[in-house]
Length: 479
View 1: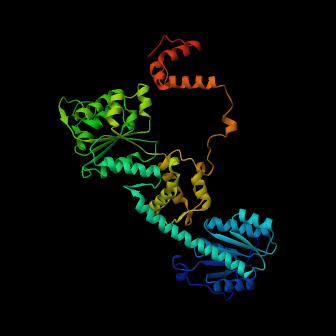
View 2: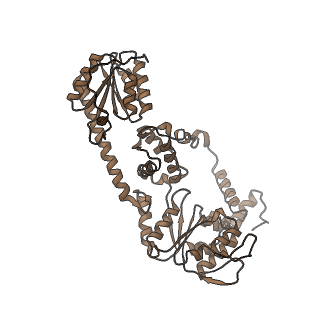
View 3: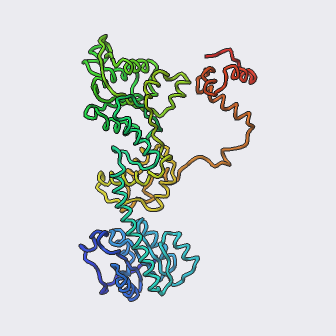
C-alpha cells in the first residue's frame, strides 16, 4: 500500500476525553480515510449531518490507530490507489479490531470487485463519487446493528443470571429437564447416580443437589475414585489407624466420617475394583465403616452421590461391576447431556466464560466475531463444557481487542480433524459380515464370557454356541 504522509488540516477532531467515553452513550463514530483532503472533509461534514460522530484523516496509519484504540468501529475507506490498497487496508483493520466494519469506496466499481471486497472482509463497497442517500442508508443499517448487538448483550447478561442453576448454565430442553429432576430429588435423602460423558459438569450437578438438600449446611466431600489405588482409596474413604500400613504415622478419619450428616460424592465410581465395590456396598446397606487396621465398626449417616462416564449396565454384563451395587447407587439416576446435545446452550456458556475470564484477566472482551462464532458452533467439542471453558480461557488471554477472533482460537478448533468423509470410511459389506463383527466385538467387551455376551446380544446361549461352532470357534471354554 502506498505511503501517505500526514498533513495538518483544520478538520474537526474530538478530544481524548470525548473519544474514550462509552459507546453506549456516544453516537456511532465513523473514521473517514481518503488521500484527497477535500473529499475527506466533505464526507466528514456529510456524515456529521447524518447524526454520527466523524473523524477525517489522509493517513492510513492514523486510521489504524483510531481502530486499534476503539475510538472508531466504522471506517469509510476511499483510497484512490489500486484496488489492492483498499483490500490491504481491510485486512490490516480487521487484524487491529476483528469487530470493525470497513466500507470501501472505489472509483473503479464493479459487481465482481464489490463481491471480492466483501469476501475479503469489507462490510460494503460503494462507487465513487459516493451517493449521499446510499451512504446514509448503509450507516443507518450499521447503527441499527450496533444497537441490536448492545440489546442482545444486555439480554444475554440478564439471561445468565436468570438461567444459572447453582453454577450450571443451560436453557436447552435437555438441561431444563436435568434441573427439574435435580430439584425434585434434592429434598429426599436418597442415593443418586449421575451419568454422562467426561466434562459435562457431573460434579457441579452433584454439588447443586447437595446445596438444595436439607443437609446443605453440612459438609460436601469429594473423592475421585480413579485417582487412587485401592489401598489409598480405602484409607481416603474409611480412614485408618496409626501403624496400619507403611506411612500411617497417625490415626485419621476418612471422608465418610468427615462428611457424616452431609454428602459424599464419588466421582468415576466405575473405575473401582471388585473389592472396593463390596466395601462400598456395605456402607450403603448398613451405614457402617471400618477404618483400615481397626476392628471397630462406626456408624455414619451420609447421602451418597456417585458419578461415572461409563455404561454401568454394560460393565455389569461384562463382570466388571457389581449388579447389587448398581441397584443401590441408582435409586435415582440423572444423565447429564453432552454439549452436542445442547447446542443452544453454547452462546450462553461462551458469554458466561467470557465474563468469568474478563474478571480473572482484567479484560473488556465483549464477545466473539461472527467467524469465530461459526467455528465454535461447528466444532464437535469432544471434551464438552470443560473443553469449551479451556478454549475460551486461552482465547481471552490471547485476544488483543474487544472481540475474540479466529486467530485467538486453538488450531484444533480452527481446523477440526473430525471423522473422515463417508467415501473414505464406508464401503458396502454383506450383512452377514456386519453381524459377525458385532458378535466378535461384544465377545471382546465381555472378556470372552459367552454367557454374558449372549445376554447383551439378546439371543439364547445355545444360539451363540451354534454360531461359534459354525464359524469354527471352539465353545469348550465358557466363562
